[in-house]
Image 1: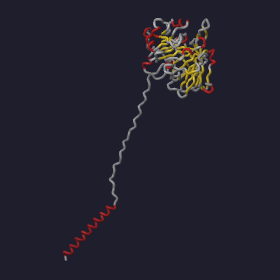
Image 2 (image 1 turned 180 degrees about the vertical axis):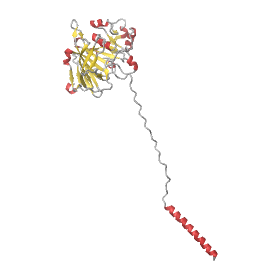
Image 3 (image 1 turned 90 degrees about the vertical axis):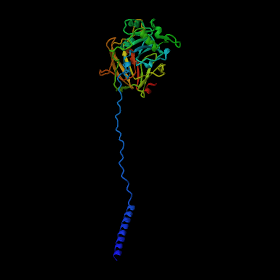
Length: 368
């Protein structure tokens, strides 16, 4: 009896154990499998780096106010007399000029004088024509070597004073080294020079190749390009009788494109039309020398004028204290004119003819 009782107890315990194990198994089967905990993703955080500051230019052209190499600021410019008649077209190298002066001479024609600090790589440069005194005084303002082929009587007298260093096509000691004539045009419209010719002439004459350190910039340039408050001036027509030039403002480039003889004025070297950022009309007195042919245009004293840029026009005044000083330009409030950086075209306007200039607010109004 005792054995049977013990056996029953053992069997009961075993049954309970099996039932408990089954319950555990059943419970485990019905539980959803727990996913192992994942470590949070650590994204690579990129620390933003400050953009490198744009390197500001340190050297600026004396002629244009635009950034240039340091060596350019020390280079002595040249001032080249350029014929401006129909017979001499097209010009060679004029697009390299930083400033161009257009002034009346005899017979209703004009001549252009380009002021260049970069005239490299030119095999044909000009054409080159003769000197007039007021051009000499302008060249003096820039400490430029004056390049010309001949001169008027009054020009010869002025050059003899040594006021400028000049290379003259009639100077037998250098002429054939500096100048040459072409066969595609008749004389006197076929005299040209070149980069190498000018360098050779300066060496032969022992001219300084670096500008005098005390020479100031001709213009006061604006730190940043600006549009002045003033009347609209989309088309600008100086009175000049023979070539009838005009400028049309192109808002996409911010420059005035030049025309004369009813066509775009182009540089035969690069094939591009002449375009300028600024135009200045400088009203000047005028008379004729004895004989009534050659013009006398004094540049000392003061007078009125107009500054054109960005399709606008503003009245200005100018002042030049002596034949050897710089011409300064002022706005109506008496402050020095701030010229936009870029190429400038200066027209000497005879006061007696100034009323014949034509300025149009729009191209449509002008008829061009």
